[in-house]
Length: 75
Image 1 (cartoon, rainbow, N blue to C red):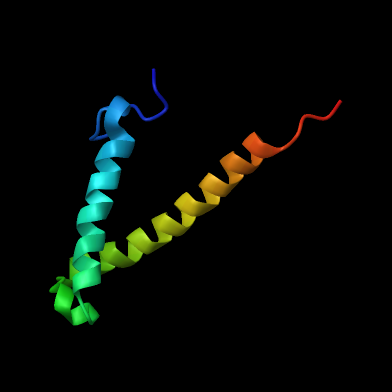
Image 2: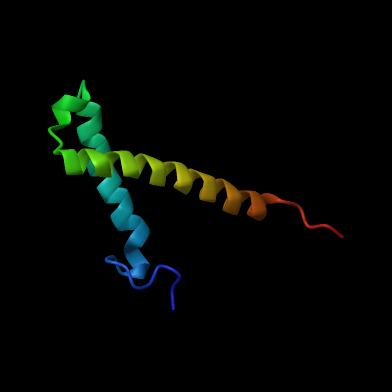
């Protein structure tokens, strides 16, 4: 069983689906000049702010995983 099981996306395409979603979101962000241009409801604004925290955590986990991958083996 994949570590990405039991979520809305099938485990074999979770990264692909996430990338497509981030491309959609980033496209809207780059077109906006101000937060108000996004037309977010108060709930969507709360989710937007939550997403920023998830992105920070994603980057930390990426660094942790790739640092482990790149460390030379100790003899």
